[in-house]
Length: 140
Image 1 (cartoon, rainbow, N blue to C red):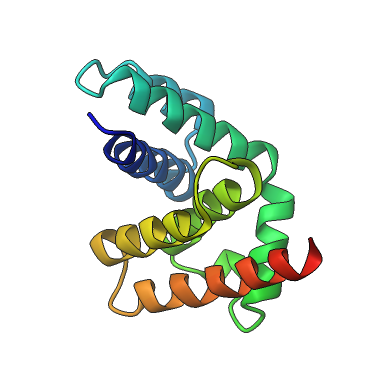
Image 2 (spheres, rainbow, N blue to C red; image 1 turned 60 degrees about the horizontal axis):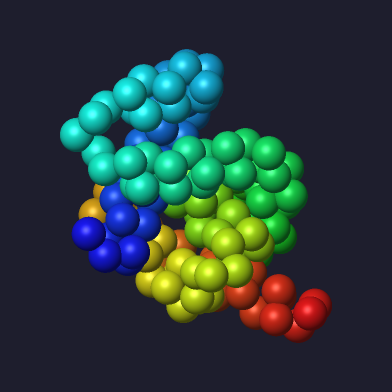
């Protein structure tokens, strides 16, 4: 399996874990453990999904603040859970995964939004991440 396919699978897995925890209120550690026990998912995808989920949890305050700053008209807690968690994963990658190209992180998030989000999710995700990427570029 290619690195890009592994990462795509991991992003989907991470989004499902974060979504379930977000919507159902299940402890993310329990949801993560259950998903990581699924042997049908290749080990590299499970490892990257775990890194994404734990990274989002660890840096969620900063990530959510960046999303809120980029989309001030849309309070983070009022965003659709799918969009919120796709954005969190992508922002985590923009901040912490230096081997993931910026465009790849944004494009993958937009693709996830097309697959799992609402009608305008992909445009919203693209706009928010474009703003965050521009803010990161201007601050570095």
